[in-house]
Image 1: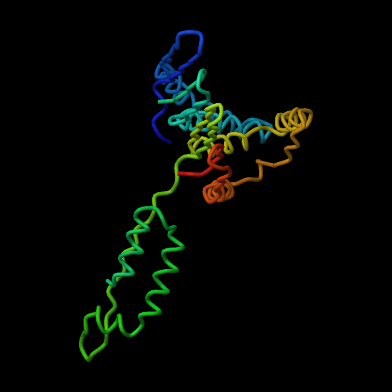
Image 2: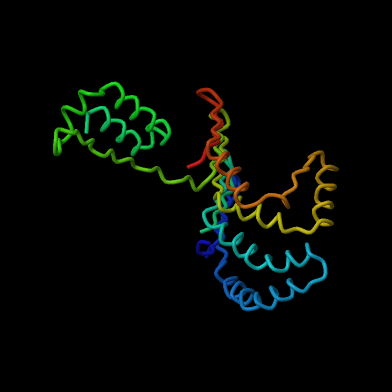
Amino acid sequence: MSIPPALLQIRVRESNRRRFGLWLPLFLLWPVLLLAWLLFPFLFLLGLVWPRRDQGRLLRGLVPGVSRLFCAFRGLSVDVGDRADGVRIRFL
Amino acid sequence: MSEESRRILNLLAEGKLSVDEAERLLAAVAGVSGGTARGGGSRSAGAGAAVEEPVMVVKKAPPRFLRVQVRSSGDQDHVNIRVPLNLLRAGMKLTALLPEEAREKVQAAMKEKGVPFDLDLNKMNPEAIEEVIEALCDFTVEVGDKEDQVRIFCE
């Protein structure tokens, strides 16, 4: 698991308008992730005693799975456009 | 180390050869040169037995991103997408955790949209997921001409 992304950059470029950029502070979600990990032992125990096996497996694997997914977003980059217009999204 | 071996290792370090190709070429070079290489490049020990110099093979780092590049010089359209392979791994592993009803609902919804998706990710273990990712890493697409190009590759 790598470090989770800290920032999300969104940049929009339009031919007849000014371009604008946005920086979203994803590091504000880090405490939420920390809280999820603090709750993880209880969720894990709950998942062990849950009557349905598949739902129990989801409970046990939810926090690690979502954490892994969130951390994996770092490095994702999408850049689409043409001469006049374009959108760039980057997870940093 | 012979000149051919050194050249092969340089190409491997520059990423122009894969590890398998380099191994085959080194084996071929060793086979062709045979006794000449042993006589010229090896040290003799004890009662005349020749000792081969070990060949150092530089391992190429595993790819980390899936890249999709589309360029059209006419409209100057461009698409440049870089997806971390860890994102694919994490997504597949998380999807494998979905309960049966949720998976059936997702499959039904995708079928409605015309995407038949019958893959049972529940049965996919981490090794199978790694095999899929590895196969994806070996998958390269380069289509186009001077004006329009589509490239899909891993780096």
